Image (cartoon, rainbow, N blue to C red):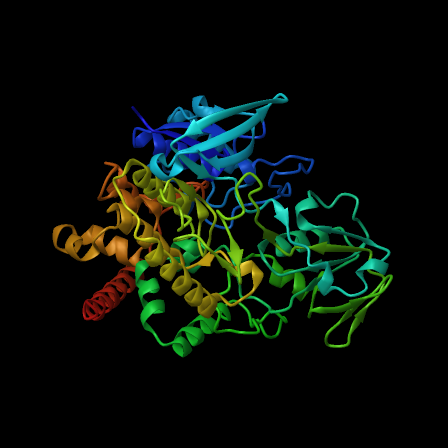
Length: 535
């Protein structure tokens, strides 16, 4: 008989977990507290308790080719960066394609998830839910927690002396929907992440003045990279990841600094990171530098104190007549339906094996999916997590001992602090390609580029020097997809399709372009030769 799996949440992680359960012959039931799928990416005008919230203008900062599921490319006419409504459309197409809606119980809240009385032998869970004021209890063989970590706002008011006497309005960015009602105001945005930048730019078009306060600064990169391609198509390659792993920290820092400052000098704009050795998440925004350039946004250091109407900063400067403060200070995560001992955060560390499995359970039948902040798209990451988890539930993959898992958690946390720092917002941060490969290795889905070099050199070069997208993890191992190779080789046409809406005659500068291709090919051969020396 198929094992029954409870999937909590019908957002991105929940949908892909459902599909992975079905792929592995498991019997899933998804509990979604709202009336529809989409989770974070389904915009609603009103903020709802217990549900993620976004502003109306949100656009993805990872491109469609790097964000789609591994066996289901986005339609080629979709834009490269998607408005939240367009991304939701993709999720709806995905859910229909794989007939996932029949597994979802909408408007059903999970109240508790507790070990069954015979958990030590069965690994089963008792799940209590509520729908239409009626409670129900059911027993499941495994549980996938897919409720996300963008629900509980983090507002560190204790770090802002004087906030209690501030006479203006203040709220978390979770409450922000659109700039209406804030026209002509002097607005202070606390934080310098992607949401903070988006909100500051949108507000600056109608506000009298917008200020951004940042403690540490950040590198800012535009969505458009080399030759006009999306930034992550160029940024996330196996070759680049290899260089980051083998080069000394000083050289990595220098390379990053050079690349980031090609667009504009971050020091001149007050954005340069305080600690340039840390791999903090990039701010992906095309408009922030220009808005700073013409004064619509002014960058300020950390707020030292607030008065009734002013903000005093740590450099001694004062900005008067502040009307509104927006705290874009991130989120903490909480799972009120779980026992506190299952997902613990202690000493700035999440006690989950590879950000997924509680290490102390007698049976590995509970997994957190999507509780991660990779330096890349969350969608392929959550998918690989779900693929591994479902195979663990089936007994096809096994986890190491509790001692080994705890040692890995501690070592991983030390490495995370070394790479990303101790900031509360970095607790779930991880390298992108390294983590994807780590997950894929567990299921046998990690491509072997070296062996592929002998069998299919063209594909091997694409895998190593081209973008590391999700299709790569369907070339080998369980649940291979016959269309994976073609999807990799044709990704360029899907990137360019929505751009080429005006027919042009072919360029006549053949000799120059041909010469550049020859030089580029030689560079690839040289790079490949040196890379092979590492193996």
